[in-house]
Length: 106
Image 1 (tube, rainbow, N blue to C red):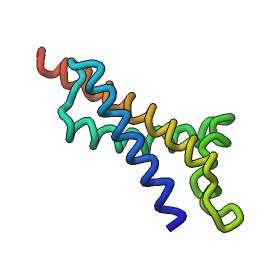
Image 2 (image 1 turned 60 degrees about the vertical axis):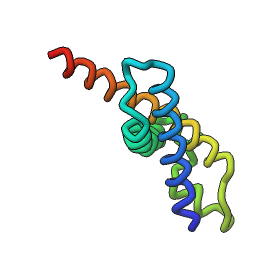
Image 3 (image 1 turned 180 degrees about the vertical axis):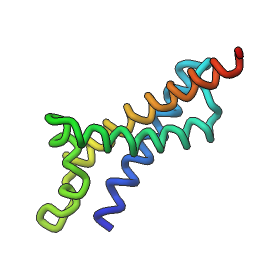
């Protein structure tokens, strides 16, 4: 259970980030389902990448280490994973929206 919670936080935050970008920049909107799916994938990828960057690895708590500390969840790490998931989801949705717009013009 402690391993699933960080993944769910990353997926939900990423989906939220994707939908926020879709609403703010209409030309990047992939639709609600598209924003959510691409954002969720971006949330996972963004948190994974943040864990590999020195300095940010302590922010996300290196997902495996966050679940195993003292038999409980590290809420600071979950907050960091949520923040990086939100940003990662928004970024991947924006990139996918740019690619979609470029493909539509061609």
